[in-house]
Amino acid sequence: MTHASRRPPGQTPTAAGAAGNPDRFHEAFSQFPGGAYVCAVSDAAGDVVAEMPVGVVPLALEAPRVLLVLHTGSPLTGLLAEQARCSISLLAQGQEDLVRRSAAGQVGGEGTWQHSPTGLPVVDGAACWVECEVTQTVVDGELTLVSANATDVGLAANAHPMLSYQGGYGAFLPGLLSVAPASGPEPARRVAELARGPIEALASELRVECGVFAYEDWHTVSVAVANHSPAARRTRLGYRIPVIPPLGIQFVDSPGSGVTEEEWLARLGTASQTEAALVREQLARVRERGWSLMLDGPLSVHDLDQLVSDYTNPEHTADDEAALLAAIRAMAPYHEPEELLDTELYDVISLSVPVRSPAGETLALLRVHELPRQASGYEVHSWISLLQEAAQSVEQRLADERLTLTTPPPT
Image 1 (cartoon, rainbow, N blue to C red):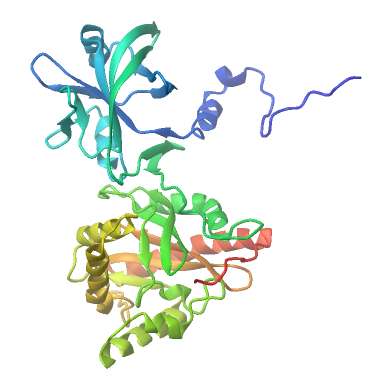
Image 2: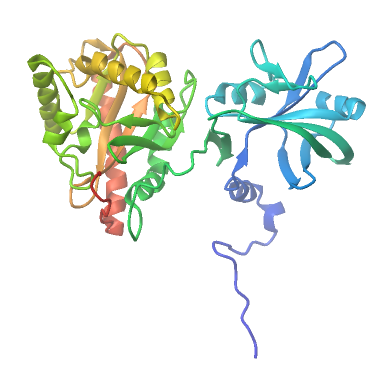
């Protein structure tokens, strides 16, 4: 019996293979997620010498060993040959600036380092670190392979590791993409997949952060992010924001979420007639316009991000929740302005538009952050148009797939 050979999925034959098509080779390997690591030692003067290794591979767990891949001839490989020990730090969400500086050969700086129990430099705030003793070094052209025993480790509490994937960096947050279908393609996850190209293009064009936010149990959750903002201090991937007026306004009365106007307004809690009237006006404006906007207010973007980050922590305290709710209330008047005049200047914190199923259900939101300050109303309207075009392109893909929403109502 003769068996026909089977080609692996997605493979197309090439005359020269990977060596003749390095771009294709790089594209394929960019699909392999990896950590964002920093390897470091101290020199004789006590200064830290560090670099981002090409790769870090755990080799065994019972007798823990690590394989490091470094650039041959770098200052770090020279010191490793002398000292035979080093540290490896796995960077955490929010340390993207360190990645940028590392890529430019500027690892470190004031406040970057703390020390392990034996005095090795490790990155302050890293998701974890490992002390290593070098056992063997092999030079292979431009790369040096370093085999080492792991002698000590440290784990940070509630720190999410940062991953490298498809040429960029982001956070890994288990479970946040699972927003509930009983069967078939999961709507929010599918929106995130289909929106990858549009949000990446928009983030690159505007030099901003653009993300996908899904509904999950009275929260909006950031499930995908493309960040090209030169000023961003952290990525908002994984943020959980409570659906409390005026937040989550575009999920109100969407059959997929089950959030009714009455229930949403009730979550406003004890409020004055003025506050309640303002929220109803904001809801009416969003329904008419089809987009949602938040302007700068009494709290800085940095402070707001920190409050949301603290609340997102699974072990957040009652004080963390109370602080965020107070901030939401303080910022409420700065949502959904009555009008945007082309000649006036605005500081926009965020701008959102819905992605809807063919049946009109709000599956997710496309949202931009890190927009330029003091933008004219005309420019803000142009951002809205671009964001709506991105949402429409995702909706068209959803329509082509005939995606149906199966997410159950909140409990």
